[in-house]
Length: 246
Image 1 (cartoon, rainbow, N blue to C red):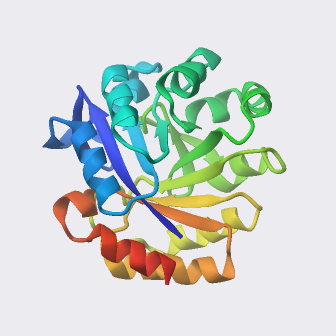
Image 2: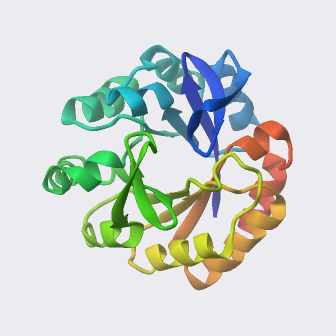
């Protein structure tokens, strides 16, 4: 399994939110690119970027910060937040050098468009499943739909997605660990055949070990995104990488 540090960008700064709540923000750095280099040097093989302003605006916002991150590191970056049309995808992958664009809201609300974009950008798009009680949340987590994460993922079976990224937003940024229900959802998604990346709730090395154990029976569970735990130092990146690869 791959451990993927998260860099959430708001107003050009590296921040973390609790449960996606913009009113519960902690600023960890005013230089996201410097943070990106730090994680790369600590052993990260990929970075997970989130444009938090874009998630609300519905279009990329922190373009300068993203460009600086990509130019500062020699590892691939994936990015989510506000990717809702082809122009945004092209900006990210063609102009900014993002390896994978993550699409959530538009995959739920415009499924035909999303299928066509997967065909246009094979292996370059991730399906972002942000869920609360297993139900999809959209618009920067501001709305909860009546569609389950598994139901949405099934609509795209057999297509050339780079990965499915599943976030339990109830756990995200709370440093409370990964609950059993989240692991059950992750395994069910992995069994559909997609590469699945866990996000939200990874707090200690024991959480990484639990995911690694689940991945043995469900080998398409290929990674975990880690954010606040790294910044609050409840988890050391080299320790997490070792646990994920053991």
